[in-house]
Image 1 (cartoon, rainbow, N blue to C red):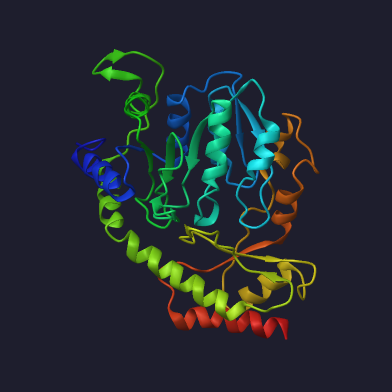
Image 2 (cartoon, rainbow, N blue to C red; image 1 turned 135 degrees about the vertical axis):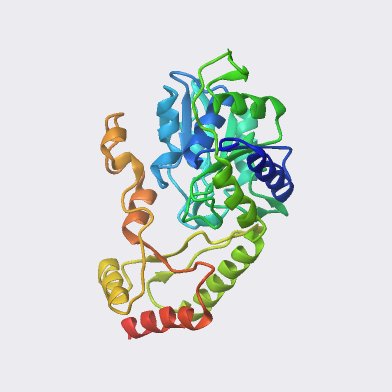
Length: 341
C-alpha cells in the first residue's frame, strides 16, 4: 500500500497517544488538515471565520477554498497570538468559527477564547501547525478546540517530508475528514459528498512514525537552546525577548525577538551582520496577510491591524533548532552582543 496504508494507520494511532486525543486523520499537508477540518466543522459559502493576519497564508486560504469569508482580528503584542478581545469585536451573526494560531510554538489563550466561542456558538479550529508537543495547563496542543491541524512539513519541529494531521475528540468530525481526504467516499466507489485526494503516503508516514518517537528530545533541545539565548541576550536595550505565558510550555518552532526603536541599528542591518558571521536569521512574517493582494481585494488596507503591522517590521527569528550545539548558541549570543557594543 503506497497511499494510506498500514504506516499511515500506525502514525495516526501514535499521534492520538502522544497528543491525548481520540482521533487523528493523516493528510497530505497542514493546509489540507485545515481545509478538511473547516469542512468537517460545517464551514460553507458566505460563512465568516475569524483568524489572525500574522501567520502563514495556509491558515487563511482554506477559508476561501470553501467559499467562506476571511475576517482578521489583530494580535496581542506579547505573544503574537490572536487577541481574544479583538476577536470579540469581529463577531457577527454570520461568524461560524475561529482559527487561533499557536504561533512560533506557543498555544493561544484558550480559556478566554473558549468562553467566547461558547457564548456565540462558534467552532474553534486550533492551528497547531507550529506547536506539536506544546502544552497549556498540562494539556498538549491538539486539545484546544473542536479540531486541530498539525503540519509535518520539513521545517517543523518534527516532519514527514510533507504531511499533516487533523486531531479531534469528535468522532463525526474525524469521519467527515476521512471522507474529505478520499474523494468524499464513505466506502469504495460510494461518493457521498465533495472530497479531495488528500491521502498521506506510507512513505511519508514511515518517516513521521520515527520522528514522533523523537519529538520530546527535539523539543527539549529547542527549549534548552531558547533558554540559553534568553539568558545571553537579556538586558540589551531595545531587544524584546520571547514571552512564555503562564501555564504554557513553549516548544519554540521559532525563537523570535523584537527590535524596537531603541535598538542599535535596524533589523536589516543586524541580519546582514549576522550573515557576515555565518549566522542565519529570518522574518516571520514580513507582511501581515491583510496587506497581500488577494486579501486586500476583500477590502483590507494598511492601518487595519496596527499590532500585526508593527510586529512585522520588528520581529526577527534566530536559530533555535534541535541540531544546534551550545557553542553555536554562544556564537549567536556573542555576535549580537558585539553588534550592540
